[in-house]
Image 1 (cartoon, rainbow, N blue to C red):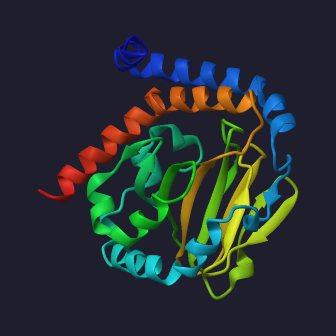
Image 2: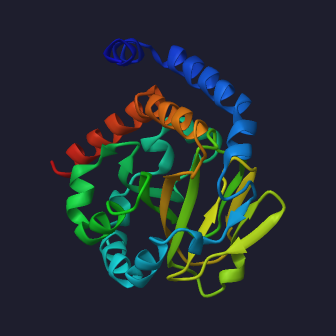
Image 3: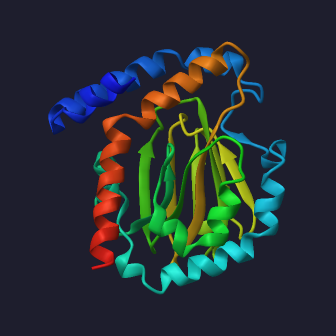
Length: 252
């Protein structure tokens, strides 16, 4: 395992892109296995109530919102998504999608977590939580059609700050559409093509999580292996280094 980490750490930028692309190709060839082994089925959106922990998150949404408001007071210091994760340049390349990270596949943003202790306490109790951040869409931001690389996780979004014209702030997954509501959960499979709009004059903020998809054995075991590979990949490691650099500059 250590030798794999060492090999990945020594890759240059071009080599990292090749490794990431090849890894995604392998995982996508196995998507039919994940679909067949999914305990909750294979569809675009899921009922969040199938996950018991969503009730507590929803009941504490106002506490999380208080910490969001503190972040928004210093929005100019929050990095753009592509500044943390350069692989996102194909999806977003302006300054209207901000991300405030807590976790990325086991890597913890210590300072961010310290600034938002209640949010951190809540997300750390969630079974299978792999990624967590505040996703902040500025007015009139459109995230174009794209898809996630791995069917072994599901995406959870909790509405924290939603524009009054909420129907104009929506997401399409496959051919299905939903919009956010404050204090309400949303769960979907991001390997379906999806896109997002905030066609309002207000900011939209959600708590964004990736959680392990419930799978039958032995595919569940295979999934844990691929999630481990993602955790040591250049994609995640580069993002963590950029986030660490941002935190250092912020505290200078």
